Length: 411
Image (cartoon, rainbow, N blue to C red; front, side):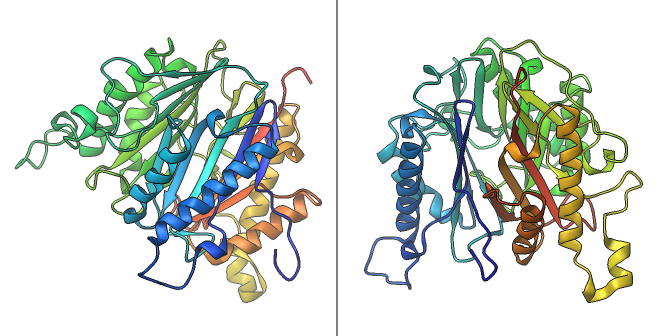
């Protein structure tokens, strides 16, 4: 793509898994507005599933082998149409998460999709429906899914009632009319862990100690410090690799929800997660590891280009160089260098990257960020997605990046 062509990968296959990252509707599915045709969201969803079927088939997989699905929408009105198309293709949908974001890499698109699937040779997939675990009434996804040692838990909010139709549970809210009697984000997080995540994991015979990767959506990033208190406590101060996604407002299926969390766990004996190396701690949340091992893969926490003294990379240089500098390229290059050092420390290679997910404060930064990746990984088609966040956890950071790297332990 582009005048100075950059290669992009729609999918990557390694270790019996298939990563489809940042699927966007094909442009023919984005026609000029015509109210006589099908809803535009239907055309977009159909385009995504056509691509998914083609790619999964090419990788020796299929829609019945999807392990996890993440959808990102700019318009909540597109979600029910997406669900219609998904049910048409999937008898039971894989554990799923849907978040609302301000923007995508294709400006006129209303939806972007990430899929993780298994090849046909990678074993039997088991769908689990733990007792007393309510799931959203209309989405049709399985709450928990197992493949070999892997366990995937869908995105959950602090909802209650059959089908989660009664909204956020009263126990997850400050009582009406009270200014305090608990903190709303902490109440939601505690309820979500105790009443959703723990029962989901227990249905697969696991506990929080088996969790290797978590993705947390927050509709108000100012809630992050208070949420972290609960999150770190739940894991005894040793959380899994964690990525926080600041969403739009509202950000979830329930308009007043503040948080949604999904998990990837593994049955193997828990092993210590890798802490950031010297000089890297500022890139991660307090107590977050830089990465966790999940089977034959390294799953990284979402990172921003912030040094240990709290200064964002490149800001001071940009003040001196003005328009001759590029903050996004400097920050991306710093993150790539950080990831490469961490890979080397774990006998892995950044060249075996299978997924790059980036959140930008300005989507115009996406292309120059891709160029920085291309310089670091020449000749490799980038398995990259780019989306916009309203802000990032550190002032001055303009990109947050999460990656997955194929790294067999005994290879």
